[in-house]
Amino acid sequence: MTAAARQPRLHRPAWTGTDHGRLLVAMVVAALIHAAVIFGLGLSFPEPERAERPPLIDVTLSRHDSGMPEDYDFLAESDQLGGGAAETPEPHVPETPASRIARETPLPEPEPDPEPTPTAETPAEVPALTTEEAPVDRPESEQAEREPEQRQPLDLAAARRAAINAPTPERAQPDARGPSRQFISSSTRSHPAAEYMRQWVARVEDVGNRNYPNEARRRGLSGRLVLQVTLEPDGEVAAVRILEPSRHRLLDEAAVRIVRLSAPYAPVPDDVLQGNDQLVITRTWEFLGSDLSAR
Figure 1: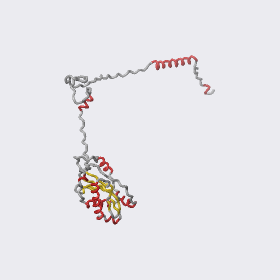
Figure 2 (figure 1 turned 90 degrees about the horizontal axis):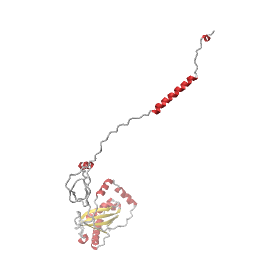
Figure 3 (figure 1 turned 180 degrees about the horizontal axis):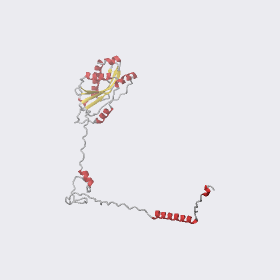
Figure 4 (figure 1 turned 135 degrees about the horizontal axis):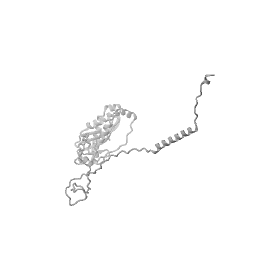
């Protein structure tokens, strides 16, 4: 016999129907127990105790009793006598802690304003008679020659500050700080002013043609500018101002020099000044290569 035949066979008990029933019952019971534990017992957490807040106290501060006035306009917590000069009575408002703190807190001292930059005083404005003349066509070569002389750096910030700080001109008053001025120009029609203007122009043209700038004559320069001359009553020159320059600085400087060379002029009549302190003459000067015209 072989070895396998000699070994005894192991006996394994077979599962019976009774064992299967017991296992099924045990599983059902375990499931019921778990369901009862999960759904039957409720989890609850204790609510935290709320901290008790102290009650709020509304405190209103009232001023001291100053005695009951006989004539009153409003009702308040205490008797108070009104003060001030207000025409319409205002109701009494109780002072709150916030308003008291704001009242007792010192206000910061305001910073001093910067001192304004002193600017030159402009003379008072008086009625003026001016004229407008048609512009004269200038050759392009002359314009191109003038452009390099006029190209200068501009300080826009300084110009803006000067325009802001410049005082607004006002009508001349008897107590004005600057001298009052009478303006005349080529459009003047009154007889005394027209006669004085004619004499002044004749003197300027005579002196100007005799002292015509040699450089301008040599180069054949021509140009047109508007000049404003301020005269004292005795005929002396108080100021010379170029309102509209020409394209050549040489001609502008020559015009100013001719005005000063022609001084002193004839005294200004009282009927021309008309009660003013100075006479302002505005004329258009034309340099025509070798001749000067101030008409």
